[in-house]
Length: 114
Image 1 (cartoon, rainbow, N blue to C red):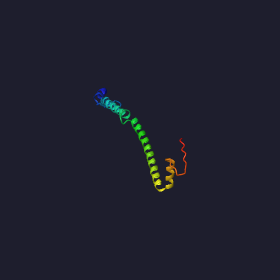
Image 2: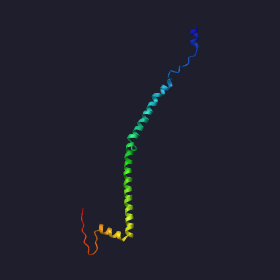
Image 3: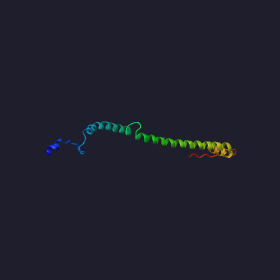
Image 4: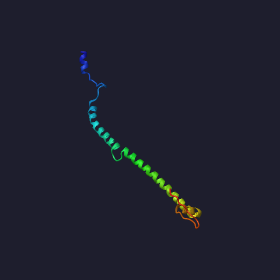
């Protein structure tokens, strides 16, 4: 009779057994995960805002910033030169003689081209 008592006792599930409902959902999670991974790969490598496009745009921005700084430096140089030409007659004469090949009376100018 001891075997009859074991049959009538309620059996509890063992913790080592996997649950069936979790297994049902695992096959449905794979499709959205694959779609999400596919979208991330597309956005990272192939879209207009991809990593390679961002690097290219940043390189272009850097080169334009360098060109802008060079233009600012040139502008500041000519503003300073203009101010000095308005206040210094000796500098004005030197610039006119060097750049425009002007000369004083009784003077000969020889121009050598490079």
